[in-house]
Image 1 (cartoon, rainbow, N blue to C red):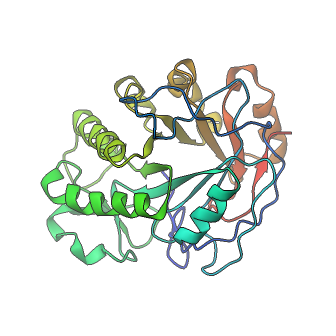
Image 2: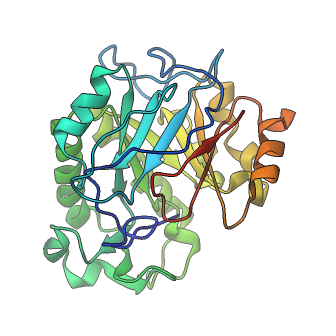
Length: 289
């Protein structure tokens, strides 16, 4: 659960037409893969694979608008803000053979988004701690949220993204201002999987380790934040067992470089696509040696 702050950006809110200049110490060689399982089979949908090599990836949600694009050697997958990344940036990455994931905040409202005024006040709840301008959504209200999120998914598909990264699907265990349950979170997450697949997009489980058992059959990969630092990576290993990747972010405010390299060599984390990032998800990146 990271966010952006506009101006700021997502892991604080972001503005991203994207500068992908980064310090890259590539995490295994790896390729994006096409094949593998996840949800109802669709031969035209990207189906990322977990192995035999570990796909190397980058996530940038805080780049300056209009920044030049610099692809990273050996990086196969990019996770970028769906609203702030221009289609030509997505096309440029696709031309290199890379796959792109469209970040969408599924569980929280952000006051800097272009569609912010379309959310009725009754579905906007408590402030998201630590992230100005962000408030939790009442994920039970699909009759209200579905058209809004479908529009975002349509934007991801139209921009040429291969997949979607719906954030904050695990808000049920947080003080949101709503009486949310685990069952509400599962229902909302499964709606996201179905809606993404209908548009030819793969979909990732973002965090929510307690939901893995219910979601792994319908999601195509997982994205984690601080799972190694907090000791819950094993809770999403069902994706690796199913031949699907886990894209794992560890943050520099919790994990230094030495500790990160220790994670890279930890047999318990074999198969995880690890990357070390600053909390604001800017261009800086370090991967496994």
